[in-house]
Image (tube, rainbow, N blue to C red; front, side, top):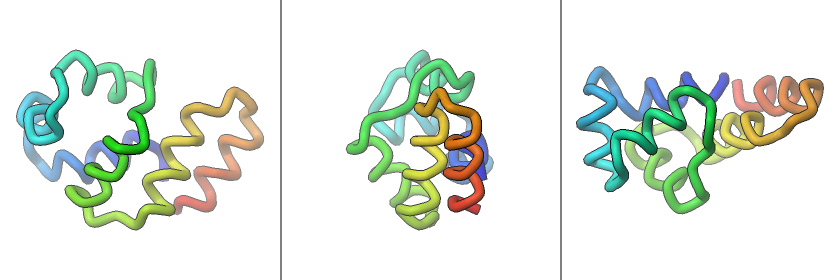
Length: 82
């Protein structure tokens, strides 16, 4: 699972704009997450866990895989999050 999959679960068929409002963040911030330019902080990841129904392990590992600049480590995180 990658972080885009997490965001898709958080949205659950609702627009990114409405999802960003539910999360209490700007549409621009959500767009940065969607485009892989930024990763949310832990507090926001916790909100995403609640909204998505995913396990904390899946969400945190997918998010941290985005933060890691080592492709092998990132792939290992994604594999663990699956």
